[in-house]
Every structure is written in C-alpha cells, then in structure tokens.
Image (cartoon, rainbow, N blue to C red; front, side, top):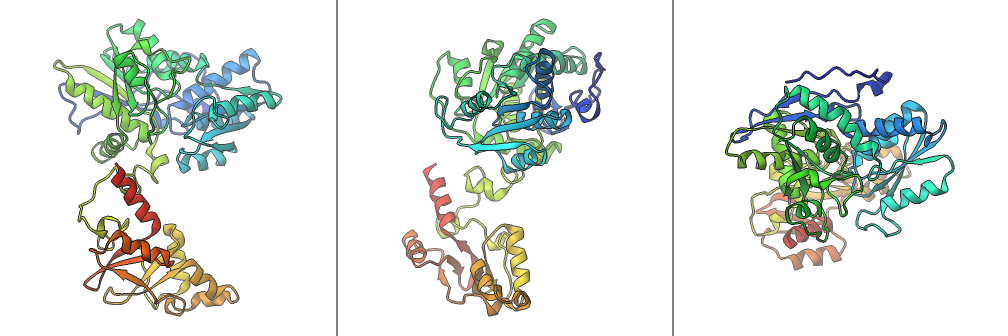
Length: 464
C-alpha cells in the first residue's frame, strides 16, 4: 500500500507542495501476532518528519488572520522536529525564525536548522516549566521582546491538531481502504493524537487510539491510572512530556504503553535491520508500542503507526554502537575486569591506531576523522610502542608545518602506562592522577585505551 489520496486543495508552490501525501507500507518481517501492522512514512516529508504538516498549517493560519505579517519573525520552542518544519516554511516564505532548543536535541538536527538559516538558542533540558531557562518560557519571553514576532506555541495552537484532522487522518483512512482498527501515535505537543482522534471518532468510531510514550513521561501513567505522577527523564526525542499540553485531548486514547529508551532504540534498529526502514528514536517508541498492542490481540486487527522522522538525524546516537554501549542501551560480552571499561576494543576493530613510520599528517587526519584527541602507536606485531596526542603533534609542527611529513615516532610519547585486565580501578585512578591514559595489554597484546571519560561512562552504567 503506497498510494495516497488526491488533495482537493491547491498544493503550495515549490518544496512546500511536497508536504503530506506520504506512503504507507506493511510490516512483513517482524512478528505482529494475529494483526497486520502498517507504517506511514512521515520521514518522506521535505525535512524528514511528520512535523512539516503542522508547521505549514500553523504558519499559513497565522498569515490568514494577521498574526504573522510580511517581514515578521517566527519564534518557537522545540525539542524535536517542529523547528525543522518551521525553518523550512520560514525560509520558503521569507520570514526570520528564532528557535529555542533543549540541549538534548541531536546535533544532526541542530546542523540542519542552522543550514536552513534558523537562529538557534540552546538551553537546558533538565529543568521544567517555571524555571527561567525552560525552553518554552524563553520562547514566550522572546516573543514579548521582539517587535513583529509570532510565537507559534505548538502546545497551545489549535491549528496543530487541525492539520492532522484534515490531512493525516483522511490519508490513512483512504490508504487503508476505510479499515482501520487502531492507530498508535506519540504525544509531543499532542497534535497528532488529538487531530487523528477527532477524525477517526467520526470516520471509524471503533478505531482505537493508542498512545506510545517514553518511560519517564507522565502521559502513559495518567491514561492508565488516572493519576498524575512525577516526570522522570528519557533520551528519546520529540515525544513524552512532563505536563499535559493544552491541545492534547488524552481522553481520545483508549490505552497507553510506556516504552523504555533501551527498547525504543533496539526496536528502531530492528526496524532498519529487518524492514529496511530508517526511523528516529520516537519511531522506535511507536513501533515498540504497536508491536506490544498487536501481539496482545486475539483477533486480527489492522493497525497503523508512524515512522515519525528519518533516522538520518540519529546516526550519531541510536545507530552508533559506541554511544549505545556508553549509554547502557546495548550489551557487549562481559569479562568482569578492565576490558569492560574499555569503550573501543582493539580486537573488535574499534580502535584507530597509527604505526611509528606513518606521517604526522596521517595521524592528524585519522584523529580528526574519528573525532579523537590521541591514538596508540602500534608496531608490526601489534605491540604498543607509544601514544600520540594532539599536543605532541602541535609541539612538533607549530613552528615548521613541513614537519607534518615527519614520522610519528619523532613526536610520540614512549613513556606509557600499561595495565593488565585484572588491574583495579584504583590502579586506573593513580595513572590518571599522573596525567596519563591507561593502556590495557594482555600478554603483550594491545586491548585498548581507558581514559577518564571511559571510566565515568562505565561507572554510570554500573549505576543502572
């Protein structure tokens, strides 16, 4: 199922005309129980997310009623993809845009926003409403200070759910041939749940709206128990809240699933591995909840969920094995010794190294490419001969750039601190206190480096 309905309204010109009318595909290689599960590929929107729909709708509504005038400034608080959609529309229509962003947003998104010309103001993600550094409060304050500005306020903007009621819902209904038993979605601002819930209440009254929510968010517990608890923290981006947004009608959700970060990321990776669908972190949450729902059914149902955005924005996070291991979301074989502290293991091909006869330019390029500040220097038999860091290279070349052609052995430090895998954490601390990194070797075989950051990450994982 990949066809989409024809729209009755004239599409906007240029790139904005590509928003919406996204494909729908069926999951065929992951166990869905007795149900058939379909995924609407919102990643096919111009900026790669479902939020393009509401960005266009909210800006055009503001233009129609005069809240946004030519030459004005669009202001919004965004923890996810709404900012990208707004930046795209703002650029296409000639508006300035200021976005207030919590510091947990993936760097790929920030780079994308800046490339679109957005003025990005980064703020804290560990504070709540009422705190002077809370992202929504900052955006509201800027809107009062900047003349000619329009504060989008997606969390309170009624044009947000209307966009889904008028476009996303009818598309799904037509693509599914009018047979939809359940729709699984998340809540960031609440527009998707509210808009689709209103549409399907009329078009298919028996259709269940199911909430997929990150563990730590207050929304799933509230739907399931009726009690408003304390918010925790979660790494999934774009969905989950510590409050109920004004436009979010939670009464439309008949059930809710709280999904851990670990499950979200692992299911998202499974979706790519088995179905070839590259989705973001919230897509993993939705897919995990949809699978739980499908597998719990005893009679066949036709279920729809979303690939909310493209996984291209999360390659440095959920699709990065090192990040996944460091955060405790991916397990590696345990040894119960210092091998468990090593972030990048040489025997797994994870360590960037140089040889003593490589040039300093080669070493520098490898460090830059891997975003690291030091590399071990290995001899022909794999033995550690030294270590080279940025300061070693700089001392060698700062007065004579031609020395980049010199061999690594001319600049490396050969006074290294090696430990065996059965050394203690206290041994590591003593090495760090002397200003060194620990080089772990077993019988002369190099296993990997341990830095202060590696030890901190290990201790964090131990905390659980």
